[in-house]
Image (cartoon, rainbow, N blue to C red; front, side, top):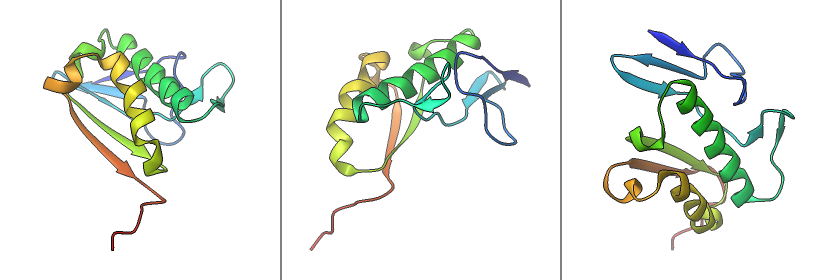
Length: 117
């Protein structure tokens, strides 16, 4: 097992690492939109925060010698379903066209889910 750590992404807060490589696969811990240099959550709404979270993931991939082209699965958590379209618009930029053909993406909304009647 090879543990991945970079100062260019937020440090793990707890008993886990930013990522680990085992069996030829990289398993990365979840990333939130913390600006590593400041230690604060990026301000400016869902698009700025999505961009920062993607940058953090990109830095972890880079530290492991990888890039977004090698990503095969992501799980994304949103606080509000209304942010779905804006999130996707930013999210697909670093992943490019591979999101349509290769990446399994799960999106989970944690709060403010509209009621179905």
